[in-house]
Length: 304
Ligand SMILES: Nc1ncnc2c1ncn2[C@@H]1O[C@H](COP(=O)(O)OP(=O)(O)OP(=O)(O)O)[C@@H](O)[C@H]1O
Ligand SMILES: N[C@@H](CCO)C(=O)O
Image (cartoon, rainbow, N blue to C red; front, side, top):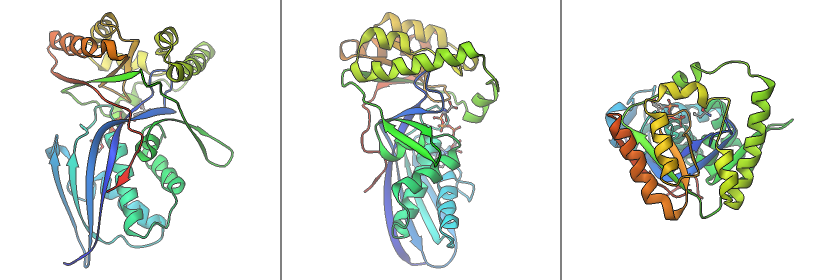
């Protein structure tokens, strides 16, 4: 088989929900997956994976990157070409850092590029949201920054959420997985009026806290009644890691995406202490973790 065309796409990890923004807010982080698509003549699919947890990624047609690639071609009513996909993984799988969003966005962006860009970024975004089922990971993975997504009469309204430069995300990534589908199964299907009001108020406060960096607003805002109370039991050591982060000076701590990664927000003066405290708290529970501060990525998916 000979090579027709090649494209390489880099896609950032994302942290969704940020506490009270369940299924509607997320931010891109400076941690990346890179994927090279080479379209070939003839028929076939070759997938090669390297990097963190490479052995866990499917290498047949069920691979999510390929699923997104094929969905794009079905959408434009063309047959997907034979393709070789080379994946360099930096984002750990099923940890609440948007690995599935990197695959969906990477596959769609690469396919659009190889097909001569017939779709706009907005159209790619709508396809990505439909595939993932919610917008809070795929939107920042595609366009970067911190983003809020809301439905409108005609589709989606996406807005940028200003993130004060003094606010630093610290992610504590444990060495166990929690799939999003499992973490969604424990959620109720209905909520009380009191819980709905609680989240509306705290999401509003979070937006203002993120924009201003005001400590009191951030400390109060990072609370939620829609998903975290139900998911904490799936994350051993949650309470101990949260207490350690706050004692070390974090504004607060939330579940990153569907978990099990935990996300603390802090400032530069406390980043080192918060990072060490979270790692130590988990260690005392017998859980190995990687804890690190990450910048907000402002670029989103990039064709290299
Ligand atoms: N680079 C990749 N290539 C192919 N498939 C991937 C890739 N990354 C993730 N996946 C698929 O996505 C699954 C993980 O998706 P899941 O939604 O459970 O977690 P997540 O996206 O990492 O977390 P969250 O949505 O909470 O941020 C993996 O088990 C794998 O099937
Ligand atoms: N909003 C999603 C993010 C994970 O995909 C959830 O919490 O289930």
